[in-house]
Length: 134
Image (cartoon, rainbow, N blue to C red; front, side):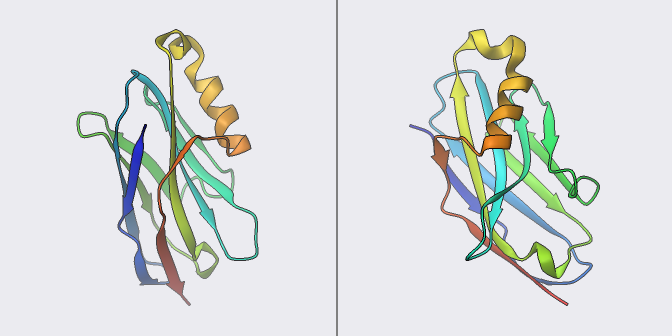
């Protein structure tokens, strides 16, 4: 059972920056995929970015350039650096993860990309609120 805890959310003015963190625990396999998603009440959840255990990354097209996903595998941490924030970035941000057998490593980037596109993860954090004021 993978456990995820997000932190780093808060309130910031438009143009500012925030860095979200996701602490993961409970992995039993070496291959994994982690992602950031966000949701505004009344709207569908949308993918922000994903990263797999090889370091391959995937971004929502309109967020790449302002948002950067990274990880510290030694600490089982994932991060989302958000720069040039806009009011429309206001949302609850969720960390998600899934793990796979080692045999998935050869095409993990494809698997992770597909999971990110579908929002198909088995493990989710409780969320951290980001509020950007204009």
